[in-house]
Length: 312
Length: 295
Image (cartoon, rainbow over all chains, first blue to last red; front, side, top):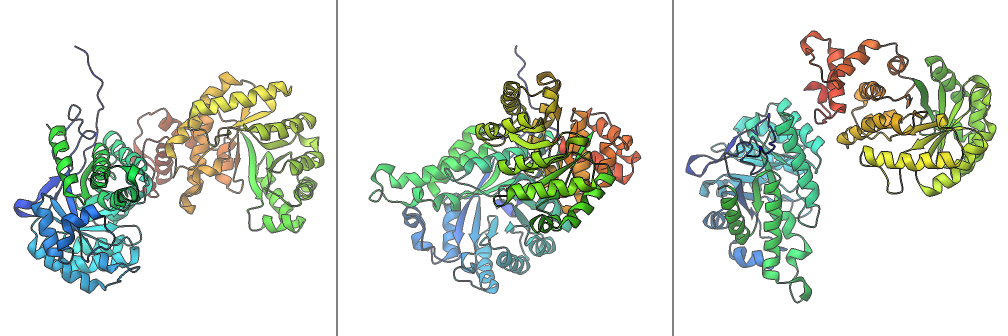
């Protein structure tokens, strides 16, 4: 009998339970590389969230409009649709607050969060517009307004971690620590959050995502490196579940949005974006993602099937 | 170790204007300070010097050697300025060093004839046609290219300082291992040659107040692997003390980290613990973050 070489792990990813009640789920807890259950433990299957906006998106791909167009005006109905379609969690993006767009005040966005939070029992991620200052303000207001359930707040970055972090500590919310595809900055932000007093089990790491053909390999390498340090160097500042916001990056590409009339040689438009979203998701699952945000229900189905086989 | 002072540099806020305005005072007072601190060579970095390069180099070389009896290390991409510097250099205290000859055909074609003609030393920079080498083997290949040209030119090997190209720990931490690994290969490849590096680049981008300890620690590590010389901040007296073997305690402590001997941190002073943590960082045992000393 041949003795296969095995990677010895001397660290474990922290376990984090998101949500409460029967819709709650736990992620993390790995003591081996993704799906390497012959080397260690992977106690929880990665989870999939679907994305909802607080205002109707005007530039989403046709394939997404077909599925969600009728509920774009109603974030609560949209969130419910995601749950019906099988999403483990819902991510509510407060797109209305974008200073380059509607620039809605934080207080107004908070009202939408309240409504969705009341109607949706699945774990709820509340996402900003990737503007440090505005997100700091909005997410802080959300943290304080929703005091009856834990939310997941992000993106939290070096420019606003104190503001959002302090709100999260006070009201027991989770934070998604986002860094710009840089392993060293990712570690530094985790240290800063720890110094601020955010407890380990309240932190998820978002390495920033590049979609397929748009820098996927950079994110993949950073995630791979994070897991190497976490598991083989016992680096406790990187032993956090990984969060990937895939949908947004994939569905903004021209490959996902362009019709067959415009580009007859690019293949079937109906499945092109979905295939890209599924491929990107699978690549990140293989490099350690614990929670992935996607947009299309067909992606959800495909990835679910993949996960079922991989977790056997 | 042979210390090459990096401080006479056109990027400096005091030296830069003095070089441009041909004002000898700030340059000479810096040169005297560096020599007093124990530098063996003074690097004269006039930058790309696209305009008036030869005049500037000649001026700085003569200005410095008026007050300091040291050989110089001439640092410019401008070939004409390099030649002007070699011509102006007083070799009474030793031959100058050309800084540098890259392993790129056009650079080698332009600069090997100068090294030959002026019988100077030169830094063989392991930077090739495709840019930075990615590991020790690529460094070895570039060194072999430069070595072949050195032989062709009939230049004795002991006039060559191989420079593995040190990169910042905060961006490409693991690649630093390529430098140390190359240092181990060098004695077999070119036993008579020397080695040097632009040491301070290792701490480029790290928090300003922590740059010195990174530089000092990496110097100890590279020396442990055989480095013979370094271009370094010669206003930092502690790094000079390390380079000149006046701080053997730190050196042996870092040696223990390299040899992976068990170290009881509880028995060390805060300063010693900081050296151990920094050495582990530079050896890629821990992943870089700006707060590495706090962990």
